[in-house]
Structures are given as C-alpha cells and as structure tokens.
Image (tube, rainbow, N blue to C red; front, top):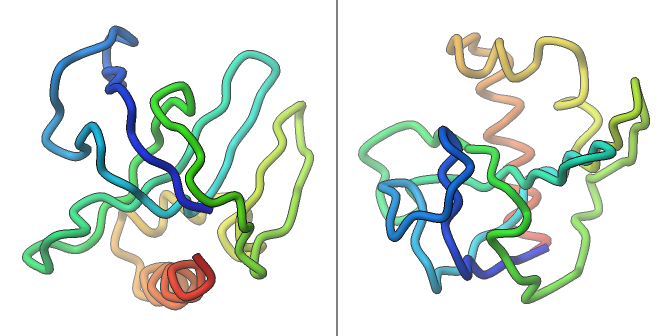
Length: 124
C-alpha cells in the first residue's frame, strides 16, 4: 500500500501544521502497518527514506493525512483483532512488545523489522 501525504497533523497536538521534520506534503510513502480503533486509523510509515544516516524510525501517523495511491496490500500482512483494535501488519510485528523491543534496539526485533520492511517495500 502506498499513500501520498496531503496534510500534516501534528502527533503532539492533533492540529494541522505546515511542516514536520519526518514527513512532507506531496511525498509518497509505503505503509508498513495499519492500526484501527473505533475512533482512529493510524498508518505506520517509515521515516527518513531519503537518508541512510540514521536507523529507520517508523512513525504512526493519522490516516487523515494521506490519500491512497496504491491499495495493493503486502502479502506478508495478516489481520488481527484484539481488544477492539484491528491491525494489518506482519504477524511477527503483532506480538506483544515487538515495537518496544525494536525501539530499544533489541537485535532480534531490529533484524525482524529490517527483513519484513524489505518484504513490504518489495511488495509495494
């Protein structure tokens, strides 16, 4: 799935802003994960696509910021419904604590992220 940013909604305030260092209006992004609740839809987007200077830091962004360019879903995505939340993502990322491990630089989680991110990008 590929989306184009049409507006930026601040993750901190929920207000529309003119710019953000991690995302640009008009740019297209592959979607790594979709998280939905009764009140909200979030997309996990890889940040810093234009640089290899830093380890990728995928962020969660409000789906209202985007329009869908390609609705093709990655073949590694599975749907999981838990506690009223529907997630579309690789099964490995849906285990409790995966994102904590990733952001804490646990090698197995970083390797799993890198492998599945590559698979998603290849499928996009």
